[in-house]
Length: 283
Image (cartoon, rainbow, N blue to C red):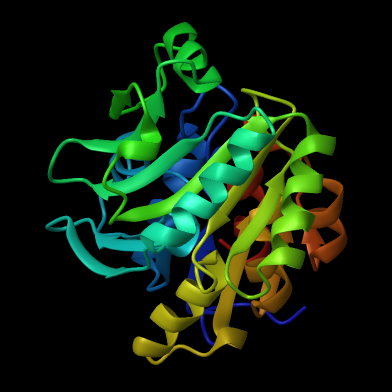
């Protein structure tokens, strides 16, 4: 394999199940490797399904300037001044279509919104499974607004609608909306999660990690072939398949591992990111 800065210029890294351990921290080995990579001239971009607030808090040990692609590509912020660089919102009417479909299936949504400056990132109904999950996990960084009836909320800055639940139910939901509303949404079922058997994430049709990472790279004069992408779950497949080098975590889902050029030899709890990037980049 050809290696080095002449070949790769930008590294897109997922958080949960990748850079973060299961206990939601960045190991010292991973922190050291990130700093060394940046010192050598590579640009590191965080590409996560999390909100910007949560992602920045969890990676506070990284002292360098970073770009955060958050909410699976639907919002991009600069860590220097928290400035919003780009955003993709679901239209109100299309939000309500999804919420109606979810209600028919007895599912409770986690509505991810772009209210960073207002102090909250998600809207929950009081009966949401996620409300109870959050109360059990004090280390989770969640800024939320709890409502009695999410259907009556102003849904003008929705980044994603997420449903936790059983994989078979969520897969049926995912396939159904793609059949009924082709090209209206981008959706995927996540398998490598803790709070439930699976998560269905539904977003703007152009809202993917890869679309946004590629667009950002091009704006910096970086070709897709000069990108390394590393992740662990199905929302990472696009960037892993299309980047110049796609790396799947050892602990990744079957689909993401099948899509990768390389699978890490260590998992997220054992600094798999640092070990593989160090090998690939000769650091």
